[in-house]
Image (cartoon, rainbow, N blue to C red):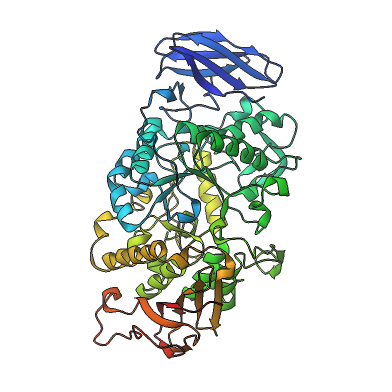
Length: 618
């Protein structure tokens, strides 16, 4: 039976403190604020120390002291107001007055996800500063935030993937209260909230977990050092810690879904994987709460078992990021992308990304120097998330360049349409909806000199193969962080306003065209137009209503005859119409509004045009 970790109220001013430390003989709770007192704890047969303490109020601060040695923060701390090295603070989660009692969540397939970093989304860099911007996102059509990790990390600025205290909310963002206010405000506007969590490693600074128990193992190695111990000796307590964490976010913060970072760097050879355990716990809670709780994976495995239920030998995730879609599309839009994704670059690969999902499904890849992946054909579209941009694609460039800087305006429109007209769940990276051109760099705020030096050297070595002669910005300079903030003042000016309206229109099509809501792959066909482009054909289950998205990614005009067995063609979007052009053209190359069946169309260079039509069925 798992334990309730950390500091939890069992009554007025009565707190039960619990910590797992199986190899320690003694444990003391050291209350340091507002009064200083030491209370010994009792150990059970499972290696948990616990004690009930009277006279403790919200805001009181404490350390744990293993074997009478020195003070350490609580590994399951709910709040670290003085940072990763300071005392933990007692939080009464029942004290917040939630206003979202009628919120019942949203189906995953209906979402338009918006990934944001709290620190750079607004000038203030806090949860509460996001709230006034939510109405603008709703007007754009966005109905789900995907927030980069907020677990307590060192200093005040970080991507979040150096988080240490996985139950604690970053103090510089506004702590537990700030996050709850943001979630409440989102739900009031019909916005679901996803949170990025990291279970493949813990950040190095402030990481005192080994002072409590064997949380790590040298049996496996990750890019960040020793792996989390999910299947070795003493793994039960580690599994408790991580498998209870999703429940913490769902229950105490009313989060709607979690995005799990790099699950391929989590190693567990046990009969019941940590993912199966999490799936079981979350589905049980989902039933009790009466609202959907979504589990989303980032996976570099190209393995459909990520999406299978544990009963069928899978991990039990509801959906996963589809990196292959990004790679296939990006290299066709930016020829320089071939240097980053050498295995991609053929139009047939983008077609496969639409029809199957995984592009690499057993083929030999030069990048991995082996055959890689398995087929995902037949998996419905709402099990995958696609994007042109995310924090990795931007921040792991030396110059932090967004797609808006790498390709021209016409290709940027085509890229947005390729994502929004797909059968998949779309994700927009903050600012992408209006073509933000500010960089998004990697930044951090460590205090340990050796660690700072190691991070700088590590990133330089990691990206030596790209832009080897370019100068790396100092990730620890405050200016690197400040330069990564969005420039909201650009949102409704010039080309940015056009791009914002383009995204609104595309999202509107997803919502109003029933054909685009059909996620089964038997309603989708792709015709490749040589190396120039492709035609994405979507239809409803009855085969009556059709939508054609005509993509020309080349610099030359391309001829395409419309299907002659479909009639009533009506144009519903054309990237070459005057309102979508960055600069006015005297005679824009627009296609006919109502072409006849079988009519030969000449697709303008670098364009996308969408038609709807009807037939008598297939």
